[in-house]
Image (cartoon, rainbow, N blue to C red; front, top):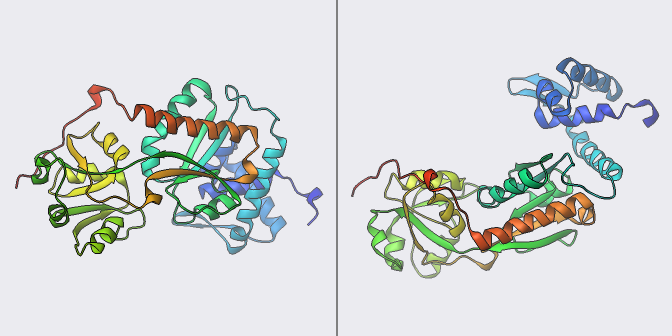
Length: 323
């Protein structure tokens, strides 16, 4: 196809509709009216000789041809944008969005710091997060995300990596839980307790179960959730305990009156800290160099200061269940 006959703005519209699955939302994202987006799509359909998007109950569904185009179009637009960016980067006047693939542990601990930096230093910069979905490296390759942050051991050579802090695991429970009388929970009583498990993939099995099995023990997992955020609400209203990173427990105790003690089970080394990962093609880009420094700064501030909240935001548990 001869590029001289293509309005490259049509690819911007295509990319926005792929992201939003709606002509109206896509228009808002790129500053176009809904009729203008529809007109651009009709022109692109004519060029591609394909419907590209079909209306359905959940919005505009991409055709097989649109799915084929998604990654190459996204990559081409990103590379063009990077090529046209100024050599230097001025965060105070920049208008840019960075996308991070991560989990709610990282968003609840690092993003409060990042949000503060942006208000003071880069008011035109936005941050979007997306779920990892078990395909972090694929997302970075396809430029669906600029960065990934998670616990990792092996990282392919095409990616850069920096550790962004370490953590340890603790047990969280309501304050009148029978195990709250211990500073160090006996291993047998820990195993015999009723547990909540946070599993981002929904698996009813975690590193605790592997370690207990090595000792000839097992535990009862009563509830499995895929986000840390729901854990304090559940354990504050039940007899369950949950084993979580200490930073997450610190955040939860700002809003819930919970008891925290060291976990009798330690995680594998590759689960103790977060790793910041990016594709090496972004290493020397001024905007990305700046943003990486912001992420590392957030990790340092978190390690030094922890997670703090005003006293008036601290609330007791909604109710407790007696034994």
